[in-house]
Length: 286
Image 1 (cartoon, one colour):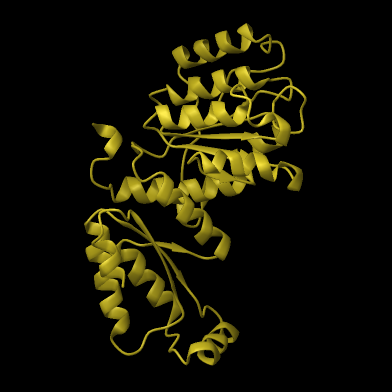
Image 2 (image 1 turned 135 degrees about the horizontal axis):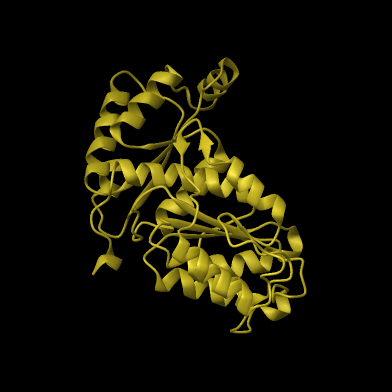
C-alpha cells in the first residue's frame, strides 16, 4: 500500500499508523519507506505498542506482533520517515507535510510573532526538543529598520520593540499585523514564519460575522501564504468561539495550529526533516 500510494503523482505526503509486523514484514516496510522518500514523498509514521500495556492492546486488537518499539522507530527514521510520538503530533505533521510540500525550505530559522507576550516567550522556549533544533535569530540591521518603520507607521513603535520574536500587542489591527508578518516573510534571514495571535481584541476582524470581509485577518494571512514560496504557519490561541476563524483560514489552504509552542515543535520537526532530506524542486520554484 505504501509503494502504491508513493507511486502516485497526486500524493505528496503519506501517513502510516502501524500496530505491529509479522516476521520480515518490518524490513519490507522500511525498504518501502526508503524508496518512497527517495522519490520525494514524505512519510509520517506512528508506531503503536510503546509500553507493555500498549503491546497487549495491539495484540488484543489485531493479533499483530508489536515488536521492539525503539528498533522499529529507529529503522523507520533512518529510512527517511518522520517518526511521531503522539496522535496530536502525527496529526500536525500530516497537516504540515501535505500543505507545505511545495514550499521552499532553506534552513531552520524561524520568524515568530504574536499579539500576546506570553506566546512569544513560549515559542522561544520551544526551539529545542528531542528530535528538533531550530533558531529564532536576531534580525539584521536592515530588517530591524524595516520592522521599526512598519511599527511606527501603525503607531506601535512606542509599545513594541522591533525584534524576533515580535510581540505586536493587542493594539495591532489587521493591517498592522499583516504588514509585520510581511516583513518577516520577505526577510532572507528567515526560512519560515509562525504568525500567532490571540483573537480576543477589537482591533482585529476575527468574529464569525467579520470573516467574509476581504480585509479580515483570515483573508490577509491566506494571501500572504499563497504569494510567498516560504512556509507560513498560523496559530489561533482561543476557544470554541473562534473555531470558525480557524476553519476559514485552514480552508484557504493554510496550516492552522491552536497552540504556539506546539506549532514551533511540529514546524521544527518538519524543517529539520526537509533540511536533512530535501525534496525535489517545488512547483513554486518555477
